[in-house]
Length: 192
Image 1: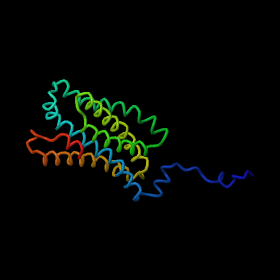
Image 2: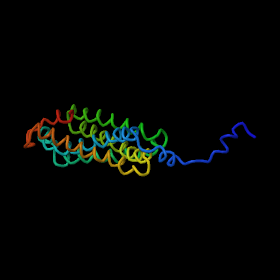
Image 3: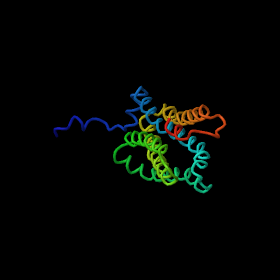
Image 4: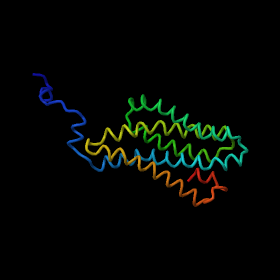
């Protein structure tokens, strides 16, 4: 008999069955909210950049192509972040990419407000998109991995609801700044 004989007698269990036996608790809700920070920031940032580009284009005399490029470059960043997320999440787990993504969205969103031209704004917005792309797949997978089977829909949908809350937040601060959206203080809006 080996020194690990007591472990040899235990039946193997899937992680999913252990999670189902434990059930839902504060841990899953807390982690879903943390994961939802990525969705909250994404909803806020995407609505905001589309709304302020008219003012930015007027301030900097941007062409229609440049104006569209600043918005489009965000999605190039999302694509790049998506490609990076899978291998990284498999290597270090899902939680860290979610946390890194949330922080990076905040940092590069604020840096966007301090840009002085088309190229610097485009670069900052690319990294905002990269942060979303890096965090959203990890966030979705993480929420599904930590939730008991019966609660997966709830735990998965909580971050999605925070996406809408981010959009509502952006709409509110835009309305408070200038309901007509003609004279927005776009730098202030990107910071808050």
